[in-house]
Image (cartoon, rainbow, N blue to C red; front, side, top):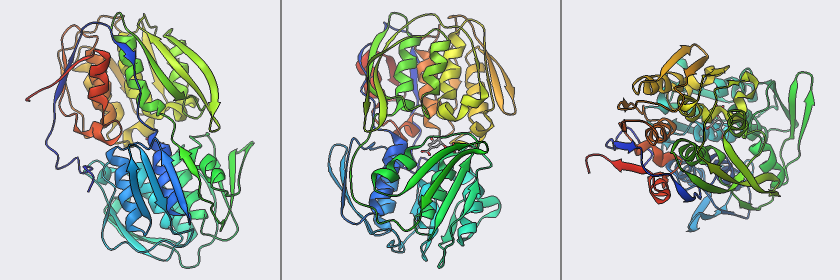
Amino acid sequence: MPDSSTDSARPRPASARRGAGLSGIAVVPGDKSVSHRALILGALTVGETRVTGLLEGADVLATAEAMRAFGAEVTRCGDGTWSIHGVGVGGLGEPEDVIDCGNSGTGVRLIMGMMATTPISATFTGDASLRRRPMGRILDPLRMFGAKHAGRQGGLLPMTLTGAADPVPVDYTLPIASAQVKSAVLLAGLNAPGETVVIEPVATRDHTERMLRGFGAQVTGEDLPEGRTIRLAGLPELAPCQITVPRDPSSAAFPVAAALIAEGSEITVPNISLNPTRAGFYEALSEMGADIERLNPREEGGEPMADLRVRHGALTGVEVPPERAASMIDEYPILAVLAAFAEGDTVMRGIGELRVKESDRIAATAAGLRANGVEVTEEEDGMIVHGRGGQVPGGGTVATHLDHRIAMSFLCLGLGTAKPVKVDDTAPIETSFPDFLELMAGLGAAITRDNG
Ligand code: S3P
């Protein structure tokens, strides 16, 4: 089993303090979203799909294990190189045991979508964080395909899903901006005859559409007045492919922010995808006046890429346009940390979705900043960080709430505060960035594990 049950892991506290500037090259891990999708589509494809650069974090390892439980042969061939022999669309077998998706909302929601149109049953669970997160958002469209579920009140895990025996394609308008829901619907649509249509009022990350095309499915996207309209032709025969997973722009956000925070820093972060559906954080940074150069801009595997050179410098508070939220949804905690060092207020609105992530990220971020002497105005679907113009007191302890991004964000905070910042648990970082502490140490960051 992967070490995904962050419930049972012993907390691993750590502290970060101000030190010399960071320097060097930060090679961040593979993209989490792309890694989950590569395993899932590989499992739905007859023949060998080979993946290089796979993120070997607990979330993705839980998905690999789940694909085995549904009948795929999934083999680790070497560092980040994996081979998948799938069962074909409609060929999934019924798992013999409960599927534990650990901490991963993406994993569980995409896998439920994947099996919702195959007449088998599977029971899903996850850690304490995942068991609090809403699944109703995918159950609504999956029921339209003919799937049925039984589980706890309020659409919470653990839950058993039974796939439709005679699935019908659906036409679904997303009520929230969610790539997970969009992807669950598209994956379910694979085994339904006819055309499945998803309309998203706000465009979200498009890795599922891109990868489905790579596997030979017929997927089109069109911008219409009602929103981005994605059409998938059901019952494709997927053709195996080679996938090179790009590096994760959401993981890159942490060393980038650390270099902006720690005085005297200059680092390079190579091979970062600047896919517009993911790059909102980097736009916000440029508006804040961050010193980031995009070196060697190019296109690789259909994704716009660049190497980022980042230097420490003064930042100015900004108002982040709410319509940008989907393209930087996972970066708000680290943006809020940067905003603490900026001159003036940073206003972030239209981010109510943050309340149902691995933790309530608005509450967790506001609490962490306040514990370190930064004033924050919290709103139901937003927050305003009152920047301290470089002088952040620190000295507080931050509660991680089983949330990897809260842990990494506040370790970055401590690299620039007057007093050290303590994070109560770094164990959840394993889900998305297993080598985070080693990578930061290599750049010269003063982060130490507490209690041994
Ligand atoms: C993801 C979509 C986002 C994001 C998550 C990964 C994905 O979630 O927060 O980390 O891979 O599709 P939502 O779809 O809930 O916005």
